[in-house]
Length: 185
Picture (tube, rainbow, N blue to C red):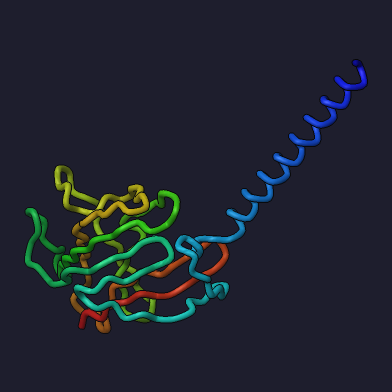
């Protein structure tokens, strides 16, 4: 009887070890596979360089590793919600919808988008949301798979900036993907 009990104990230990090894392997695989596999798509990884430049078309859905987005409009405005540009600057208003496609919630916010002179000499990030302005993109928020958020981004750009572009660059933990850009001038 004691041998039978000992055999059961060894069997339970072996079964538990096998389950733990499978679980660790599965978690390791998920961590190593990276963000590009959200929908089964392979990722072209090149460290510290983006793999391609994709020109953004207004009104078209574009896909990144983590989300889809559509720029609905991008134009200069005199003021928005009582906010005007500082002297020597123009105020750009951009309306965007982002929809999560990654299998886990992802952090999003004003830090994802920037304008520059196409030479990365003067990155300009959007204003954080004004108090009480829910349509403004929050400084940071979480986007779940299938969740869509439409926001306004405001950028103050020096008037003398030429070759202005709106940019999003895909960054993974060790790799860089595409640079999405919208030429504004």
